[in-house]
Length: 131
Image 1 (cartoon, rainbow, N blue to C red):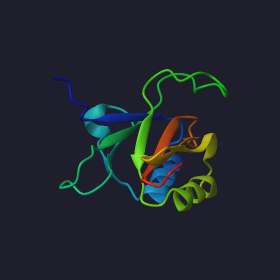
Image 2 (cartoon, helix red, strand yellow):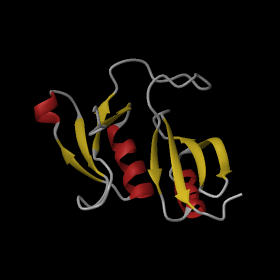
Image 3 (tube, rainbow, N blue to C red):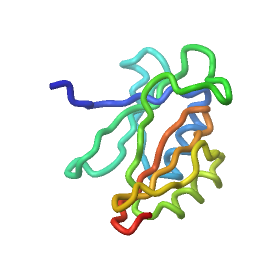
């Protein structure tokens, strides 16, 4: 079985991206540039004893995504405890709404955003009362 074990977010401005993901989700970063041969920062996304995966921010190797372009890749979705406060942090730190908050009835609140580097990501707050 091919289980997802790592993700990479391609970025134009490493400092800006580290600030965005650090401020919004509390991620920590480790410099792995020497191993990758380019700006590459490992992203520690949570406690190793909890479900989830770690990943990295890597220097974009081509053109940035065009606004309005369809997604060409995978959209990572982060689990959050408070949808509305997380959305406020996203917007405060330069992110934009791609698809507003909506209910997955009886399951969760979901929505999609664009980070400071033009990448789409989701946030997901479990809530059995969502409707």
